[in-house]
Image 1: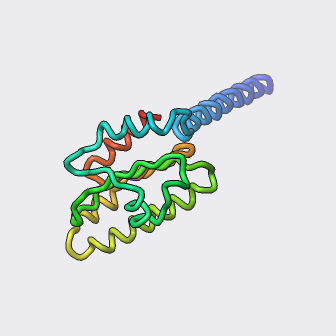
Image 2 (image 1 turned 90 degrees about the vertical axis):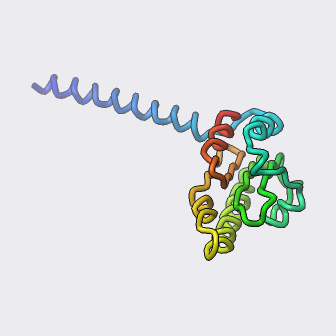
Image 3 (image 1 turned 135 degrees about the horizontal axis):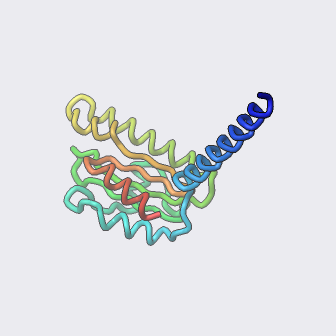
Amino acid sequence: MIEKRQRMISAMKYILLVIIVGYLVILMLYASGSKRAFSEVSKALSSVLDSKELVQMDDQMLKRNYGLNSADYKGVLYYSSPSSISAAEVLVIQVKNDAQIENVTNAIAQRKAQRIEDFDSYLPEQVKLLEDSQESIRGRYIFFAVSSKASEYRSAFDKSL
């Protein structure tokens, strides 16, 4: 009886070890960054963006809308709607170091909150898009998308890494 119990405990230890190792592998695959160059990631994502809804924005618009200076980062891809009554936009930033991640995510949170406030009283469908926005941090890449196709853009971003 004691011997049987010891074998059961030993088997449980191995099962637990396999579960932990499997969890770590999955975590590393989905939470890790990428060794791919920013130019490859931005090219892959740009090819799926809806050019009728979004146009590429310059560094000045990034500074105006997010308070971020593109020269501080390894790479920046910023698309937004040319219409003032649309909340649609896609932002991808590759930071130079982990310390910059918090600064960028705070800027995104502030932008999102401001846009929700801007649209709250007269364009509820834009508020819904903002609430359903897609955000992701993968290594040193930060992704943010507001669009009816945000999940499609997020998928393209994930695949590009």
